[in-house]
Image (tube, rainbow over all chains, first blue to last red; front, side):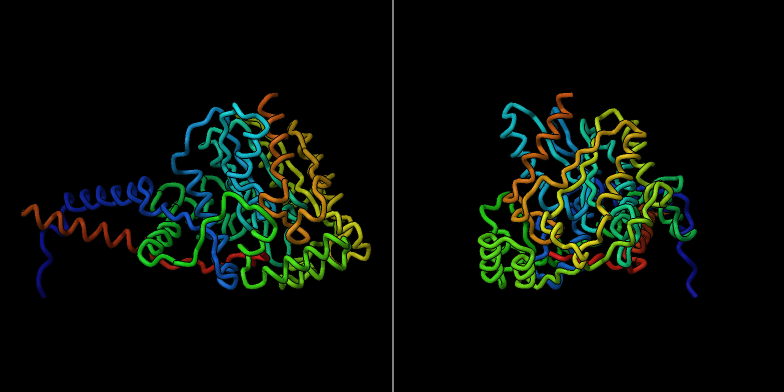
Amino acid sequence: MRAPHPASASLVTWALAGCFLIAVDLVVLQTPLVWGKTTLWVHDPAERIHRLAFWQTYDVARTLYRPRRAAAHRVAVLGNSLMWFPAQEAYVERALARAQPDLDVRVDSLSFFGAHIGDMEIVSRQVYRLDPTVVVVALGNSELVTTKALQLVNPPGRLLDTGWRDGPVPPASQSERLARWLRTAWPLYRFRQFARAGLADRLWPAAADERVPEHFASTRDVLSFLDPERAAGAEAAFETFRRQPSLDTYIKFLRTRWIPPEPFDPLPDPATLTLDSPGVAVLDRLLARLAAGPWSTFVLLMPENPLLEADRDGRYHRLGFSERAAAVIGTVADRHGIRVVDGRRWMPAEAFLDFLHLFPDVSGFQTPFAEEILRDIHS
Amino acid sequence: MPLGAIVLRALLYAGAVALLVLYAPDDGARFIYVGF
């Protein structure tokens, strides 16, 4: 057998290898090679299920760790799918500019689909990087509890999990803890899934992926963007609903879009949510951190579809859960002196894409949202 | 020791570590259902 070359065992070789690794880290962190993907919307509805939340999380990582444009006021928004689409940065910035044309403001969206309270707490650990002046925590009513599909911390949140000490949701295993330490210490490891996907997208871009439009002119535009094949039928059903607003016509609209009206991931009995619930402890930690920061914070209770008031049997939502969650959130926010904005009755039924989600841009949600942001900016 | 041999090996080691980190298997956790 041939003897190894003396360079293999030389300290100089290994030191140089370390320098090269630092260079790789710098490429991953500092260049658009990995972070250049802007077509974050997955066109194919079947593929969307698996890929969209990943690209949203990639976008959150990019927002947190890559340079942002300078602005006098900086608004960071923590949330999930309820917030992600209707509070796209362009929509909210436009609403803020309409309300106050001379305002120099930037909105940083830190929302991604499926984010529960543990995911938001993980993101909040890095929010200082954006030097925000206002931080918004957007909550529906499901983020504080574990359901069949979603835990307090979920796969997208785990990709961003850093820190030397355990968070309020302890890691499930020692290897999960070790992975968090490695992410904390080593940028290449922290961003490895994003770097892998970013590089793959550079080499073999998914041609059908799209940018999320910065403007929608109509509900038809939104429905076409979501699912071009069913858009015409969906718009016709939505028009019928607008002419004859009722739970029945709205359910027909949902079925035209192949969205089952029954909850995909039912909430538990409201009585199970108490001030001692694990999710409430995570909320407490999140709000304590935000209250201690040099910015103002408010919690926004997201708009709810008023049609659900007609669902008296609880077929399409968990009766009483919203009130319970609002009371618990209010109590915890009070402990930290954080304002709670109750937006649950802000929007009419025709502003909603389904029982939970608002139409982006055309719903007009960004207008009252911008007013609340301005209230904090001027306080 | 020739400089070329050192640089070549250093590149090889750094590349191998970077590839291992980037392409090591994950826990395979699936992302959530997207209802849009």
